[in-house]
Length: 417
Image (cartoon, rainbow, N blue to C red; front, side, top):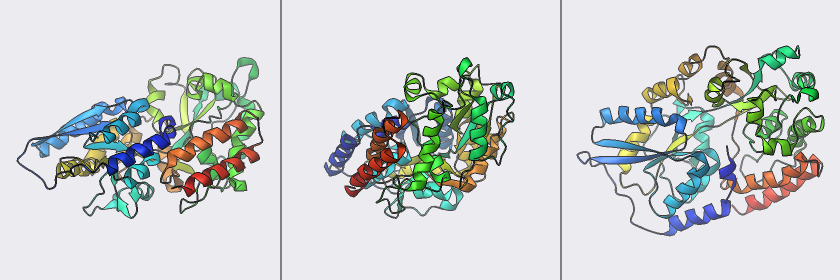
């Protein structure tokens, strides 16, 4: 999911700096309540287009002079297109922002801080912190996601393995993985995916008691022995043949292997409910459990925020729309038809939409969730993560050396921020 955010960090930074330095006429100020205005709203998920349009229509009912044009750009092109729009001074008035990219956009003056006093206690604290930079809040959380273990009940039954318990541990997971692997049938217990740290490595790092980045964002945690144990969790699975090798997972993504009945488990997000309930193979075979507990219980929490362009010509109207999107009525509607809404107390409708699945797992995980690790230029060191850890995933170097090299490289990048 974060592949695009990992690429072109330097070019992106340069483009944003150019935009910020371009001067240009500052956005207009003040509401023009009688003027007919159409706001552009940039989003990346086509599966949410209908509910976003419904939300826009609801907003216009109470703000008849403001229409909203929902513009969907696929995830693969979203950040490239947004960068070009920012450079050309034509960014959408309001658009979706994620954690890895937030600080870069905020620090370069591309997005507008929220000036009105907002009751942020209605959102998870970790998400409010994720979209706060230099003491200023820039976005209102729209949704949230945590990670769980999706599992194939048919394969568990065939291997005579009990379904994961709510309090299962790393030891339980490893014992199940050994029994679920059937080389003759081409079935692996899990795919130790390298390219989605939100779903895989970050979780086990914090479960092991390690960390990715220091609280002040200045030092890598990859040379912490506990962090290395969190990484070894995955390389051990590959070495034991309980996960496909990296080449296999590069040729065929783990989610495709899971949907083909070749993986018994898949560490995935709450957002996967839409995919797994419509897929012909998985729709009547899967359920979900909490992540297994290591030294600690932990899952990564992330969520999308709605932000305003710093150069919008309609700042007052854009803020009214962002404020509506961050409201309880908007969250109630989103929870019935979209991802988990971020507004506290509105998530039950999301879980109730699929009573056949234990979706409460994702909501309960908020109590022990860890914020997605970020810094000012997250994308830069995420590239380093892939560069160095690929060598451990292929077995070219021990995980200790890969982690040490990554820590050194990441520290150099953090020093430049």
